[in-house]
Length: 114
Image 1: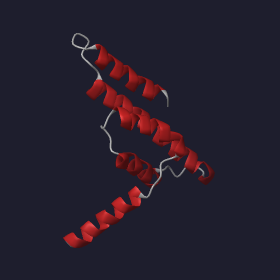
Image 2: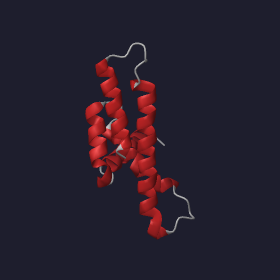
Image 3: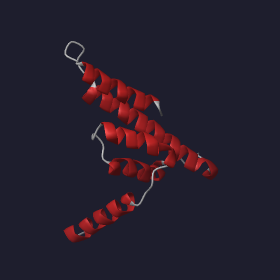
């Protein structure tokens, strides 16, 4: 495979991912999270929702596949936000200002809203 063919394939993949819409149930949460932090690009959420059908279990009946996809997406968003909070936004207790505590508490509330 040539480099040009590989790049064309990557461009097609990105275009396909950009055309994906995550379930509307997550719009408010993801919008609020994006307002609070720029840790995650919108394309990450689209990519995540895009790839889930590639990794579904054959034991899931077809009528439940969409529900399972949404559930996996919801749990993944939840875990990603918790990971971001714990690694990137938790102020050290001895050095945290009121503003930092407020920011951290807002992130926690955002996560609980799931």
